[in-house]
Image 1 (cartoon, rainbow, N blue to C red):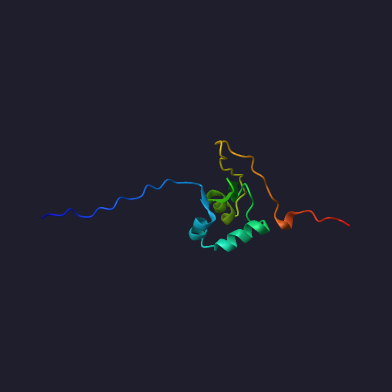
Image 2 (cartoon, rainbow, N blue to C red):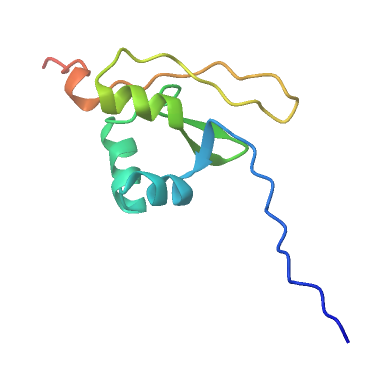
Length: 102
C-alpha cells in the first residue's frame, strides 16, 4: 500500500495595520501590562498608536513604527460596525496637560 506524503496547508495571512494588545505584545517585545500602562500614561495616544473598535483596543502597527522612530504622529482610525471610520479622539500625554491654577 502506497501512502501519500503529508502536506500541510499554509494558513492564509492577510496583512493588517491593527492587532490586539496580546498579539502586539508578542510582536513588539513589550508585555501586555507595559502596553496598557503606556496607554494609561499617554505614551501611546488614541488615534495614533491605538484605536478603540467595538469595545476592543487595537494597536496600530504603523502608528507604533512612527512612535518608535520618533517620527511625527499621523492619526489612524478603525472602522466601526457600520464600516465607516470613527472620528479619532486624541488624549494628551500627562506631560502636555494643562495644570489647573488655584
